[in-house]
Image 1 (cartoon, rainbow, N blue to C red):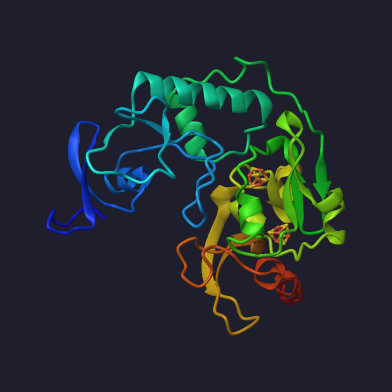
Image 2: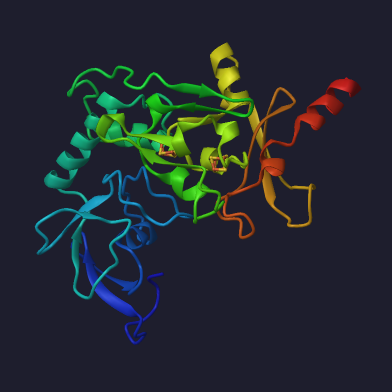
Length: 288
Ligand code: SF4
Ligand code: SF4
């Protein structure tokens, strides 16, 4: 993104952490930082979805701006002076993590979240020890919704809506700490518009949405990613050609995802690709 010349009219010159850099005029600050290997924490951001600005963890300082700026959604401008790590930025991110940790169960968050929380010496109990607020754990045949782990990043709503599935089965209901992801009129998922594509699970960063297979194995203490392999293959159910990542443990498929950078799927699948593997396990069972 950066390696071109100033003669290119699509480029703007900016200052990033004191160094001059060139960036495409339609690039976001986060795009530029990633291209320059400048590390920025994110939680609600996902490359395949439009930035939603809910987590605010990616904030940076921009000279002349009174407030901190969310880097995922702000595009660069000529002469912009950006500072990605300052005391103000670090304090803001630390407090945000501490507020998340006091209201949400982050135990299954990704390694990146744990790494940043350690870096900023986050004190998870600073605003009170986490305790379950919503006590809602909805079990389904195919997946689990555990709202105690939900950080309201809106990724699932976007994936169910115009960004991928266009089914609009879920949205946000309620206010403040009582807000939650809900179906229309809070009906159970089988009575909603849900088509069980699992695209909401595929984008959830905290384990609030999880394959039933993974959930059951975690409950039984048998979930072990160090013993899992991931095999990429092409879904055979139709001619679209979706790429599948089969996560296998102990010779059984334990979940199915699709690569975010695959140009057919952008990480999204339908119910057949995502969940249609039971017959394989049965066939394997018969032959052993
Ligand atoms: S499984 Fe698919 S249709 Fe159902 S809520 Fe999730 S994204 Fe929407
Ligand atoms: S359920 Fe997951 S994807 Fe949906 S808003 Fe909550 S944390 Fe985000």
